[in-house]
Length: 120
Figure 1: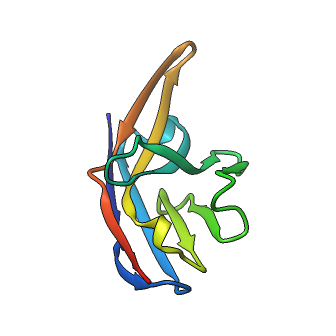
Figure 2 (figure 1 turned 30 degrees about the vertical axis):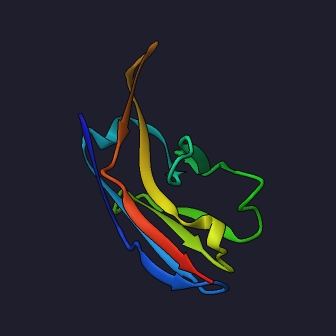
């Protein structure tokens, strides 16, 4: 089992910056990837960015060049640095982790979510 605790959400003006953090605990040695998803009101949850245990990253086209995902392996924490934010970035942001304790077995975990609101 992996537990995820997010922090760092809040209200920010358009053009500003915000950093989200997600600390993992539990069976963290088996985590293969972590990431951030978001869900705006009335929309489906969508991928924002992911980072593998090896450091490979992926980003949604809508955030490329503005958001940066990183991880601190010692703290087992993943960060999402959000810059040049736009009102359309307003959403609940969820931390996600994939755990693979053994071959052909994979589990997915979600944090409780943190609200990010961008004012125009």
